[in-house]
Amino acid sequence: KNEVEQSPQNLTAQEGEFITINCSYSVGISALHWLQQHPGGGIVSLFMLSSGKKKHGRLIATINIQEKHSSLHITASHPRDSAVYICAVGNSKGKLIFGTGTRLQVFP
Amino acid sequence: GAVVSQHPSRVICKSGTSVKIECRSLDFQATTMFWYRQFPKQSLMLMATSNEGSKATYEQGVEKDKFLINHASLTLSTLTVTSAHPEDSSFYICSARVLPKTGSNYGYTFGSGTRLTVV
Image (cartoon, rainbow over all chains, first blue to last red; front, side, top):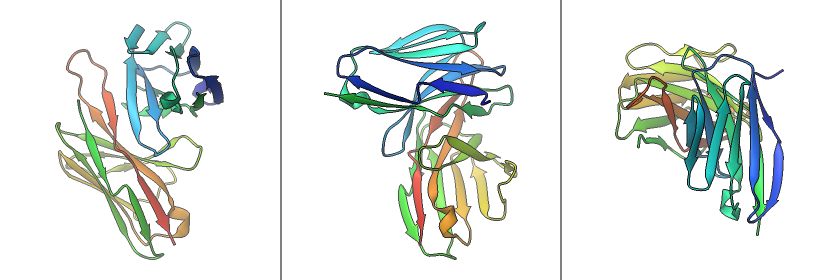
């Protein structure tokens, strides 16, 4: 079993839909990160969370430390949101442990 | 924000040659740089961790003589794939740990990646 599990693996949505991507982890963490990887390969850090909730534009990330679970929400999705979204947890040694990613496609 | 510039973005080389990939931190000092490899539709696999001024720490199964990492300054880390073979073809990406302005948790910033094709 992976230490970081994401679901779903693939997600297709119509423009404007509300999207949720889930992440569960089984290790102790210092912080949880949500990353976005576009088709060209570059990775952008979206959020770093250690508790509660953060919002940036149409993106919202939440974390429940007790349940070892985080969600990434995208409101009013747009085709430019199409990317792979990766959940990663930082361990006590300062390394990141990555989930397998969720491939999102938003159609107009 | 903290930016890491990675070059080249794409490189094609012949078998047996060596390829150097550079990652530069543009507006901060990167004391720690991580080097990852990614196969198509798979997650990032950590190859090694480099700390400025010291030898890199390689993950199990990664040949240190094959993948040479140098982190001689606080703004530059390099990965050299020596005597490249077609099986080394992959997407390589670096990431720097960023000291927090507030709090105690490190952030991470990523290079844009290098797609290496060995023919």
